[in-house]
Amino acid sequence: MIAHTKAFVTYRNLSQGHLNFVVLVCHAVPALQADLLLPAATFTNPPDHFKATRNAKSDVGQYISSYKNELARITVEAIFSYFEAYVKDALVEVVAFHGGEAEFKKLSLKRNAKFLTKPSSDIQAHWSAPGFEDTELGVFMEPEVSHGETKIYARVQA
Image (cartoon, rainbow, N blue to C red):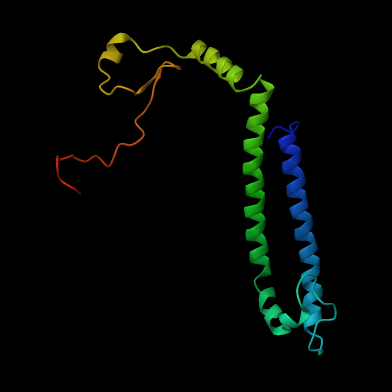
């Protein structure tokens, strides 16, 4: 990770915010479990954003049994999602740092020219399929698909 990017700061803040929420939930659920053991038919404190009468103690008690697994699953998904966004944003920052897309492409081609050479003419002559050479980079491209070949017959519908 590139720590001095805006993308990293955003990733770190979002990840930390989610982990703070995990800590909150891990403190709240044991308190809720204690409330479930009280003889009253309703909760001591009504829930935020939900009508207290819509959530019976027995229903909420069932939700608690799987909260750890669900919290772990959501945490992995969220942190991975934040990481995906970090990678995308970091790449945008790197390209912008190097002068934008066009300038970055020029730098990349120049660097490639130092290490890659065009294949010899005898290799190019034996290359059967047109379009498999990337003319900008001067390198051979692999076919994208090597399966699924089919014969085509005139006037026959498959």
